[in-house]
Amino acid sequence: MHSEHVHKSEEFFKRKLEEFDNQTKSLKKLVSVSSNALLASYKVSYRIAKCKKPHNIGETLVLPAAIDMVEAMFGESYAKQLQQIPLADNTVARELMTYLKIFVISWFLDYVTVNLLYKLMRS
Image (cartoon, rainbow, N blue to C red; front, side):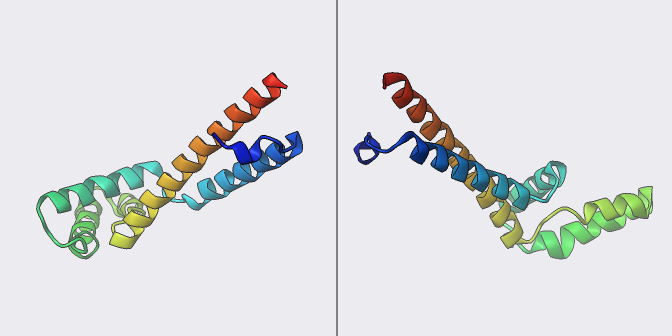
């Protein structure tokens, strides 16, 4: 599979494992939006796309209207929580890419770990 790594030392793989672990931790820190706010963002974005409306309607109409409604019904403290929902098109795309990167790095880290363990078992 990766014949260029066959003769690499165990230390090389340990270092790579540590590098990938550090990258994964760094990427997870980048995800600062709560999972509920992100889920709400995806649901609103999905509805906007389904209606074939411009993506910026979420941040210019939907979110301000939702904040107004929640503030009128439940108070300012609940309305402030809605401000955490990222509805800007670039924010939603960036969050999706961040989660995708974390998934890919985690998968690759698992792959490297399994291959390292396999090599160690064979030697």
